[in-house]
Image 1 (cartoon, rainbow, N blue to C red):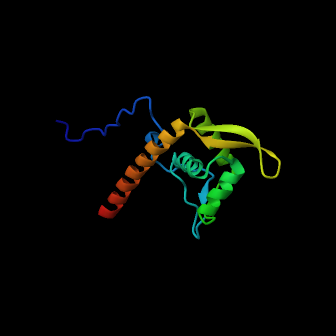
Image 2: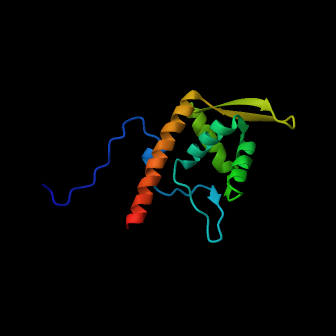
Amino acid sequence: MDPNPEPRTPDLGSDRTPLDIQLKAVPFSTEMTSPDKPIELLQGTLDLIVLRALSTMGPLHAYALATRLAQVADHRFSLNQGTLYPALVRLEQKGWIKGAWQKTEHNRDAKYYTITRPGERALVEQAERWRRLAGLVDKLLLES
């Protein structure tokens, strides 16, 4: 038996999701403001946040979604268009959300996004993965 075996990466198959692919900090332009410096999100968390918001808040256009998330986070969370729109496109391409053009309350055309049934299933799966990851990180931080 090799005393220094190489670490093995589990075979994740073709059903890989953003949380499966990488668990490292990614410099999104999404930031939470703090007195010291911005906190970077882990890859995949924005998708999870958007899915959860659409699941609980119902159909929203991108601006309303960004505004509502900022309110819920006590304005410590800021999404810019360069971050939110690619996430919405990515989720729509996966079939997890669906966009439809409608008139806003100010009679402007906007694409409203709704979570789909596959998106609801993905939300449950991704939320469970996130909870397991957060629990593991918390355990490792407490035991070190």
